[in-house]
Length: 408
Image (tube, rainbow, N blue to C red; front, side):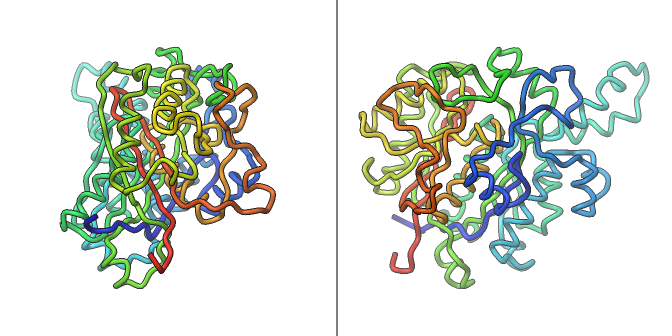
């Protein structure tokens, strides 16, 4: 099987709160973070979103950062989550100097660009605001987050729409297996922007109410924002450092069915191949999977095709599954990392996140998770979790996290 990949730390911020503990409390109490817009300056306040409750200035104060970080919401979110992950894993400055940082994002510094672009566009001469546009670059966001953590041996960015953070984790795992590094901090960060909101609105897939993934009456997405990172490392490194192992990244896969720019095929070919190949890597059978954290955006197309892909693997004996986007909103490029942390918490605490808002299941044979599973004080055993992240253009990724025990 080659080098085993262990998860030794995690950090998260989303509409559910700051940190893993706040996230866990919200998940266990089935409290959604989706609500009215508060921080994004837009006329489209009719759409509920999963917005982080902190303003930029509040986050900058927490982090003791100034220009340019204070004006870049994606960066602020990323620093908060990355610091938690690094602290949780107990990484020293020396560890970081030999580690890689991989960030998944799509909008990067678009929020700053939106504040300065009109001045630059309207200027007949060189505008002093031109310099602010350089922060739009996705790679710049990753560099600034990394710089606020430590001096990594390598920093890079993945940008594959909503599978970006999952692909950052996959890239990190491949680097470890190739012997390039022993430790990687991987995940993603994404802030809400007008570009975001207007873009998805133009596709007519935003829900004016709280989203309802896998419901027959689902009407679309609630956008969200946030950041999350996990620390992954080789078995050799984890054992040498003597750190707690949260889980094993036992399987993963990225596929691209290239069916359509924004839609997936009716039979879910890309999602099917991603899940199937990830299980093959982990030498797992469909019966081994205890829970699926579905991509589950709440759009008519995604939920139907993802369910079709699951049926191709499990027929009608589906594992328990849910979409936590009804908690956080769709955090787009950061979603793969945010939901990875959710999966790790579910394994550790023995619960399965509920499907908030689900009233009329898309198919009667689909078994949505409800509040009775692990929420009544009786823990459930979760050995293997599938985490799906599917991006525009058919770029589909699956991560599988497996329970670790010292006997393994």
